[in-house]
Image 1 (cartoon, rainbow, N blue to C red):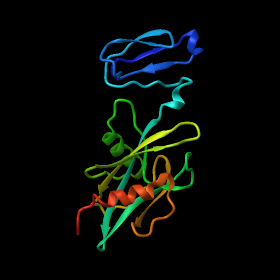
Image 2: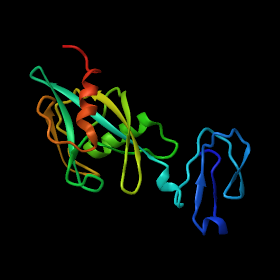
Image 3: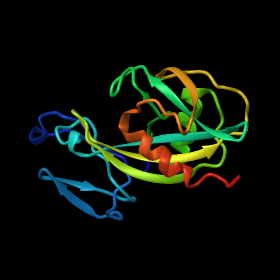
Amino acid sequence: MIGAIAFSSPKNKGKRLIFHNSISGGKFHNFQGLRVAMNAKSWVIKNCVFAKHKPANTVSVAAFREVAGQWEVLVGLRSSPPAEHEWALPGGHVDPAESLKEAAAREFKEETGLIAGDLTFVQRELRKGQNRDRIDSVFCTVVSTKNNGKAESDLEDIKWVPVNNLPDLAFKHDKAIRKSIEFLPSK
């Protein structure tokens, strides 16, 4: 984390504000009447009344494998909200100071036990949430292993499904899968 500042004040009613990676290039900024020094590339506010207005960064991975000349994609049954007990692409939150690609590789391994191949960026989509909006960045990869993987972390189950026979998916992931197919190698 670069240039982190944490503070509370009477104006923010004791809420803890954390700024890091600011876009200000080391300049001072006023925030709710407080002078704050910022010195990197972007900023984040956590644990304050304004946090729900700043979308969270999430990643999803459309992992494909070829079986008997047909493409299959890996989907997971979610074990927690949002979309609890619904099928979706493996993925999760981006940690501070982590690139989107690093987060995609980490989340894919954490949730499936598999190692992602080369990750290709496919799309970014804003998902409106009840408590907080999310910006989901979708990556695709081709997995060469015959290993089916194992549901771990936030998933109850995982399964490989033919791309032409997808189950109902949360978060418009069917759209992301269709877009990802454009990036697959030709047969």
